[in-house]
Image (cartoon, rainbow, N blue to C red; front, top):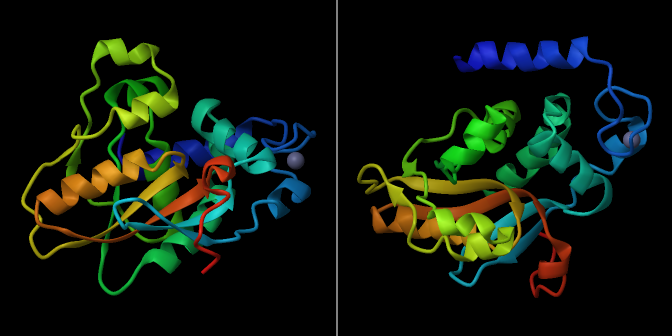
Length: 219
Ligand SMILES: [Zn+2]
């Protein structure tokens, strides 16, 4: 399905299905006003061990967490626009000069299960244009299926590769949730190895438990 048809299908979906608020379950479509307010971005910059600065719009807890999980795991595509807005703020803060946006490639299994790539859908809705498809999906060994999310992330090292040489090209890496930072670190490594400059990264939300004691303050 091309992306215009996909967008149209996703929009039609939200019109046709009356649903409960994705944040609190109240009788509402998409997000109720209260939950919408808790998606008001509070960008902050976090520094990964490899030196990549990540601007993150929201803290991954409470309403934010439920809305993102609803979007990613329960087909709540009707909250995409509400999530795209804070992501756009994070991307704006991360962009410096002429850059291309790139997302970490979805594992094939998760793409098949959802039928769409949640981060790519959000980026399209930010108005920043399409992401560059220059990274190949990580190959995940079958024994990794039993690992938790964090362990899987830590096992990402060395798994991604660029599909072409990227000399002279500059990138901002975009992802949904910053947990261990392993996904962005691995994408940055693959981009740099192909000759690209990694300017910064932008995420919709970060896990405050992990990054709550960060030395870097809000930008
Ligand atoms: Zn609500």
